Length: 452
Ligand SMILES: Nc1nc2c(ncn2[C@@H]2O[C@H](COP(=O)(O)OP(=O)(O)O)[C@@H](O)[C@H]2O)c(=O)[nH]1
Ligand SMILES: [Mg+2]
Image (cartoon, rainbow, N blue to C red; front, top):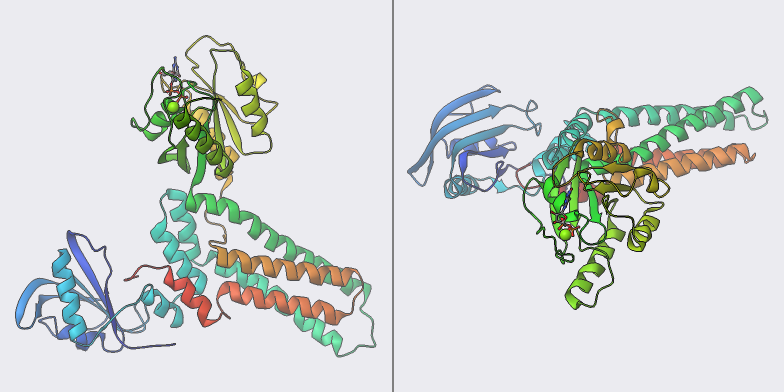
């Protein structure tokens, strides 16, 4: 479905604010806006602003500015008008209704960006980066989305596609002379090229997880036996008294959640009930919630009381850290030590001593989180796969290249190699959005907000 009718929507949030921006895009954007705006717009050049009044049914509602963009030099590639009025919820919606009455249609979710894509202003991966940029909740996430919008992934995919196309062209040339065997030199070159391509796609796939941590944050559970200072640590990280802290063991029963920024990382923290056997049914439910949260978490922050020797409960927790992304925190660093970091190291590579109560030693925890999540080595300017759609297409491309390579190595006919590489090319074209079904495009833009 390729429509060019004129659409309108509020581009700013549906909330009171200094100004609201209403965007109108399509072949009739200027004449439709003129029916609501007091000054002529059809004679305006692109990139000009006109001050005037906005009215509906003969009643002036507001005064404001109309920005005029001329096709193809606009976000959507179509004629566009952006009306800025005062940011009242009723007012902006009233002007919007007047535009609908004047001939515009309400825009669907992401429809402006979809038009930009269909008019060749953005590739599909760039359009996806727009959604990411809007959703970004940290510096790294913004920089990564920005790189996507600037075409980092699109350029990388162009390279991969070019390599595949060249190889396919050579394979088809050889196929025309089936009697001549492939020269060993050519065979070697082909293997090397396909290995490099497989490696490059592999690197792209490996980068997906760290990109996801940046975009979505890290689910981190603070766990440990009662009274070691989990809630105190939670409050320190949250910067407020989120969890109840008492000297009474078993105080925290439900899972307390807070999203915090820690260095380069965004953590979705859960403070949990202290892990112990208990007869109290409420506390027991708390402990079982804590265990569930522990299983689901990407990162475990396991807290121990440095001033008391390790107990059987501590050791059992330490055992469960093996093979997990986990940081062992020796808390109460302000008190005389009964435990050394060395006792924890056999269980996890990351140990930190701090005092949650005094707020000391936090920088070591930040360092450990960044190191463990590799966020300190994360390069936001690199080409990154930014969503499941892209990831799955890249997986298919990598698999197909792998199949082509093993077909080549195990002496299959070049036809078999060609079939695999054609599949790989199709997967890359889908990834870049050059060859996707309408259903895929619908799915991509359905996740956008209206007005974007
Ligand atoms: N000296 C000292 N006491 C602490 C520290 N952290 C927590 N506490 C105390 O330990 C007790 C239990 O703290 P809490 O955060 O409720 O532990 P939780 O049961 O693990 O959540 C409270 O009396 C805290 O004030 C610390 O770093 N140093
Ligand atoms: Mg607690």
